[in-house]
Length: 263
Image (tube, rainbow, N blue to C red; front, side, top):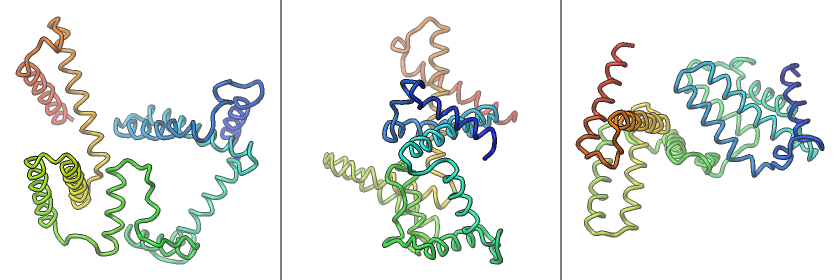
């Protein structure tokens, strides 16, 4: 094992020891689940900011969560970090015979098809092509994965125009549900619209989760601009009119456009 990884494992072992940290000693697999998810998303945020130093730091935090889970498993005599490294190493070699063996794959699509064949040979057969997509995934990303699986089996539209027509149809059904005032129907039709937007994103080659996250970041940036400008005018947001806030929103948007053009 790499000496630096070994040192990190020893740090984790000490934190969980009798004279270690009270918080770390108390943690379980269940209690650590939120932190594992949080650290993964902080890595994504750092990547989107294109900040190498932050990416390095957040990857370290994520790695520590992996070491944490391995230590818990070792205490239960299940496996340790060495077993995890060995397992993934063997899997990557066996799943890439076009690199480590004699088979040939010339496109990413060829690799995906081969990957599925190899999984079947390993005995990882599914009763449904939709199996294996974690329920805990963010809903937009999960919908994207499920739709992609179905599309691989031929259950898909032929062209973008067909997707757009279906989206229009779902929006009309949503409007109709609103007119009827049926809350359950409104929720269902709204869900259908969201699902169709994911289909649209897949057709145009955009990850819906990434796109949504970037829009949220954009909203936060623009709203903070409004807050900053309000503070400079010694005003509370509640004292400002919507027209005043809209003007500041457009200013923030304009600054973003100028910045993008200058890059």
